[in-house]
Image 1 (cartoon, rainbow, N blue to C red):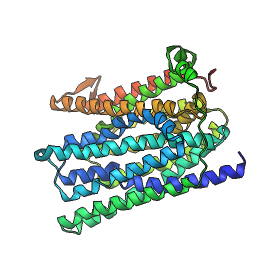
Image 2: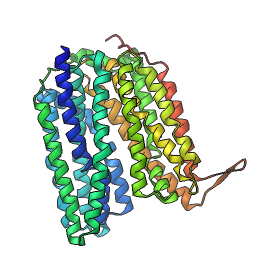
Image 3: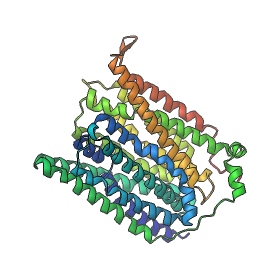
Image 4: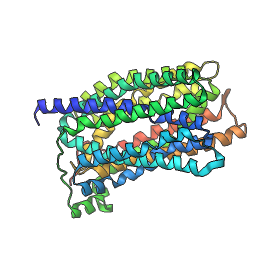
Length: 428
């Protein structure tokens, strides 16, 4: 592929990423949780909504079947993206009802809509990444995905914060019956942006998939195949192990920030901005070095640094809460881990026909993170209810610090699974 062609592809993908991220940030995550909370959803329901994207996203494992059905990754991406947006339009309709324990069927219907949306998005995303891996020369994957990541971060530095403050202003200066329209308007704007993000992708060619034959497919993904593809197997185990211990503290962080440290929403956005600013240069330089076959080294060192951010969380106290700023800064290194980890997977997976490998890597890891998040929240609540506290020499150890320490140890041990991984594809 000529360099000029790759620049054109990059410009279209960046436009897609800018529009999609802007829309996504206005329709999911905190906006969705605040929306559900204002509708009357209890803490348990909010916890369920937190784990639905990761847990149901595992059905992205069916993406290869859908790609074969549509005979095109481009069509699979476009159709599943449109179905996700169409189903998601049911969500703002809940602004006209009240959720709560007394109408459990509505609660489950709300959750089911979220689940269907994220299943469709998972299939679309995997087809999208597989498609891009064929559009761009593998020698340039690092910089290509780095620039895509930079575009995403730039949007996240501006849109969610601006949208959040506008929503708060509208809510504070409007009657309750009118304030709910702030969510509806925000959601519809986000949906329109996400639909518009598909337009640049229409201009890219649909590269045919070079499917692995049925015999080779069985051999490669059977028990003997796993043995001959040791690097891929150990990369999966590393990612699944890491996802479990990363997810263990996701609800613990939330409780610690807003419960123990009493961090305001404004300061929370500042902390997120610190992490995202660090991600900008990290993304750029990690992309360059990945294109010099340094994926494994970058992955190991970035995870070592990012995981060490938990040490700052362990030092934070109500009297000195801003230690967590160091943790957020360290987490900026996750940008390098995300780029190098995906690049390493794409190099080890079969070329072109790699949707299943992408799903095993990303979606199974996401499911484990979601389930361990529930486990972490359950363990934290049990220890808090029992007023548990321990003493290590002269240091008081709280349930928060204990879970941070367990997560940190697990994250460090995840690096050991990378030792047998080689950066070249095993014989097919």
